[in-house]
Length: 317
Image (cartoon, rainbow, N blue to C red; front, side, top):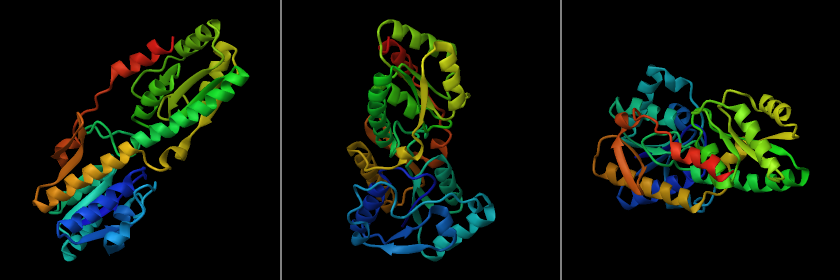
């Protein structure tokens, strides 16, 4: 079997790689590590891995197999080449750890006779078949740590802080961080912006004696951060600062939740490959590890949690 990480890195990818390699060896499988995702696969960057290959990586962020985005893999002729290479090396099963684009790439290989197990490795939590993705919990924890520090200086200066987090199409990082971090508002790609409402919330809080306001904004919202800051300053008369957390959210040692999710998903993938299963997308639903048909999983619609969103407003009044 082979294992690769593709697309954006996320904390917990190393835990997944470690589990695939060691549990695969336990099952009597030969495990190949593929470097730099699909791009490395096309360039033949493969190596057999043993238990020592994944020593001392459980706690590390990033990915020891490295990752990349591959423009070539969008061309069917290169996907054909990748499938031929895997078959030539007698690699019949492949564990793909990544987000939506990575799992769609895995589906292309599945359609060419390679059994693919997709593991949800992305901080954005934007794979609809699973409650949570590997790296999401760590990313939100990183945001919360930043919120706590920013709140200190915001309070000292009696200012509003707009914290921009990752999430181009899915606002889950902003949603969960706003609720857990006590923010006044969350601006999300899934919801229409109401900047006048944000200003009103800030003014109401100030009138109650609040020393600061925290607004958490996903990067995929309609209004750019710098423009939003100016609009809030004009609408409230309050000094407002923008903090863009950017790639800070992708790094760091994975939380217990992400290490456990990665390990349990990897265990499921290895067991299914050992049983000669068809291609699956593996994740978690209702606290249980689940496996869905890969093609079906990637068609599942997004369900936005209106209850969590409404609680942000109720709790910050």
